Length: 356
Image 1 (cartoon, rainbow, N blue to C red):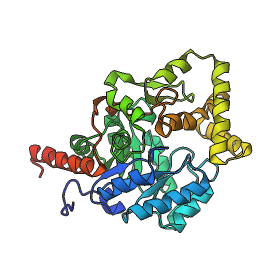
Image 2: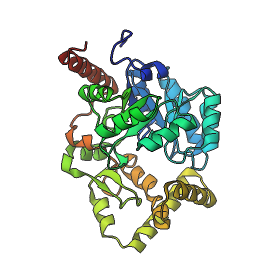
Image 3: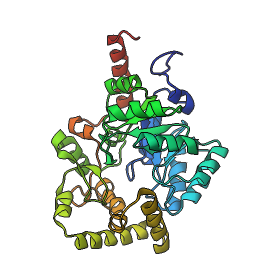
Image 4: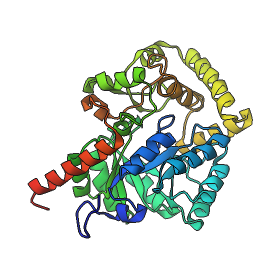
């Protein structure tokens, strides 16, 4: 899958990451496992391993396993304000991982350490001012997520977000939110992006670890079933409506906080983080994102509720983060089939536009 110099699909992103396609698989918690990351990379995309919810010993094991499954470059996605962030940076450096992905609360010290070690820094942002800040802090490229994206999201449409952010910075912008095919890839490049990042579309592939019981909810979802709610952790998230969301909408404020505390204790057991570590992380997030005390406590919900659906196969008691594209996806191809199809569709779109 080699593109000639000057080809519209051979962008600054493909050259920077050393990959043949301008497609990124995002670091979805509990979903972006070594098997999915390697599948995406072997297919010609660039995969990000999800490290945010893993215990520290498992992060290093996951990096090693990914390197066993692919000889292509990949990235690791983590939270810079979470317990163990410095240790994860050391693992990234020691294993010569190509790129680091992160979002909230970027740490200038950790970014400097990564860059000094030759690691590309590729954060995710949701507004032009955040993209500009990321560039000033040393980002080499930035994933820009529009409102159609899954998980935490904003209200600005991806089509407007891409152009505004591409005009605001000199580094490559990667479009995220609502992408699934080659026509979307060409549209993103036309708006100034250097490529696209996809989460939901890779979640719905053969290499994805998501159990069939949960995947069926994604396949059967229509466009009207993918909604934005603040009930999960106090911040707007795009999800597939299910029994959990309906139940949370009916809980009192006190009941929601008790529910969040129970989930925080469960996450502490799995992650190995101490109560003090969780408190420090929560306070850092509250300060950076200007959260209320209630929102800070509710944030403990997300990791465990996602695990129930994505890892344990419980789409009723867990939550289903999803981009709006889930409403128009009804298949589960291999990563190789997906990436090849996207590139073929993009070539056809370019030919219709008489650009290639």
